[in-house]
Image (cartoon, rainbow, N blue to C red; front, side):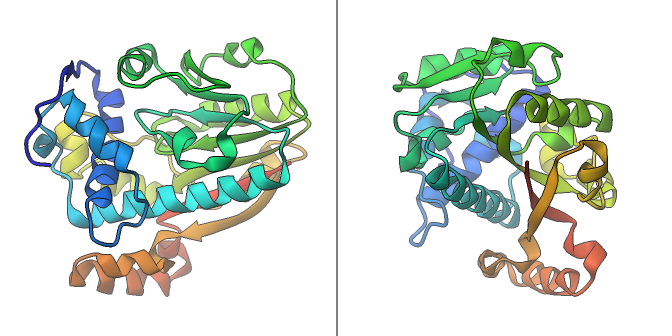
Length: 275
């Protein structure tokens, strides 16, 4: 995975380059003896891209964290969709991820991968269309992007590696929009504390791509006050995951210490909201 001989040129602005970080982490994981996610399509996509992935400065612990979060999002997604065969899926800030292929329950249902035009254009060059699947080349912060979607009784909204690049106002507007549009749903996203956001801005990977996170939240229960009808339905903590034992020894030690402190435990977590 250290050399790229792909056919597609990568010409993305800094914010969208972050999608390559997630892709590369999943590709490396797929080549491991005991993969966490096992997304072999990610490795195939990396080989098709004309990009020096070493320039992303991805560290081992960050790669493990990325695939651990993705695997948990897949599990939560599968659980919700198993119980809601009529639900559509909005995969926000999809990047180059192929969750639509990883989840068997996605077959045959309406699935919308939403991202900015440059990323969607690259996706269309890389991936073949699937039944029920559509790309939407829109920003999730556009006030009217949801108006083009058909009305459905329920929805699963997955936002992986997206919300930390928004601001509070945009996040609230996004959540208010989907809750108002769909009678029933589930929103899954990764969240960081404000302290984590400040720290991550200095991370070598974000400095390499030329951007960094902008928004964090300490207590995700605040969404219940922001959006009537929304229910906080729990969190998953990276530092409490068994996957941290794939990290270097120092990272394992730090994770153990962080898990003992409620504030530090929330440093990097996944949040589930329902309505």
